Amino acid sequence: MKHLLAVLVPALLLASAPRARAADPAQPTPVAVELARYVLPEENWNRTLTGISQQTVQYLSQMAQQQGGSTQPELFEKLMKQIMSIYSYQEIVDLQASVLAKHYTEAELRELLAFYKTPIGQKTIRVMPDVAQDVNGQMMAVMQQRLPAVLEKLKPEFEKAAAEHQASGGATAAPASEKPARKK
Image 1 (cartoon, rainbow, N blue to C red):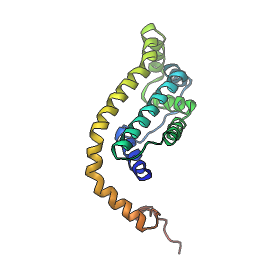
Image 2 (image 1 turned 180 degrees about the vertical axis):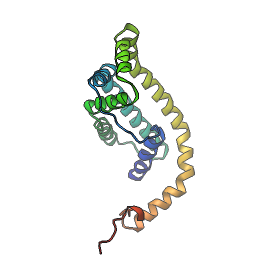
Image 3 (image 1 turned 135 degrees about the horizontal axis):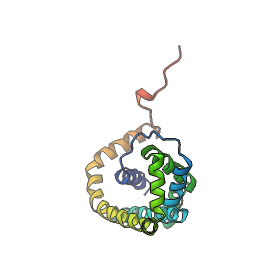
Image 4 (image 1 turned 45 degrees about the horizontal axis):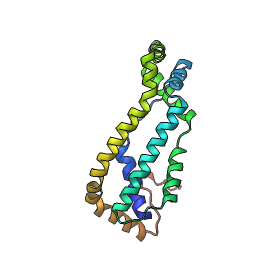
């Protein structure tokens, strides 16, 4: 079961995460921070994160069962708590404010804030967590169908890596480019 989770968790996170881009965070302005808080109230953040955590745990539980493993509810409960603790609400507000400041001018930020204060803007804020959860649920359903074939295709590579890991006594060696140079 440990080996299954060691393979599934990174695979799930890599497969479901958007492609990371190198971020050039901008210094958030007060308007950017206000907008970030306004469009993502803490209640919505908590609902969104709970939904993502539950979907991840449900998916991993189903994968474990399909692979003949047992589901250990306490392990998945711990995993869910860990997922929930990855980011604090304030960290997300700061991150979002920085990204907003990077992509919008101060005038545009004010326009967006004015929009979100309208009835349709307020509805958008209310329903977006449900929209995101629906999209994530549909993505997870497709992933449940497709990921087993991907994992099966990569199984020889995972087995080779596991054998190399065991042969090295469980230590992971840094690539040559990351090894510190010897002092002379």
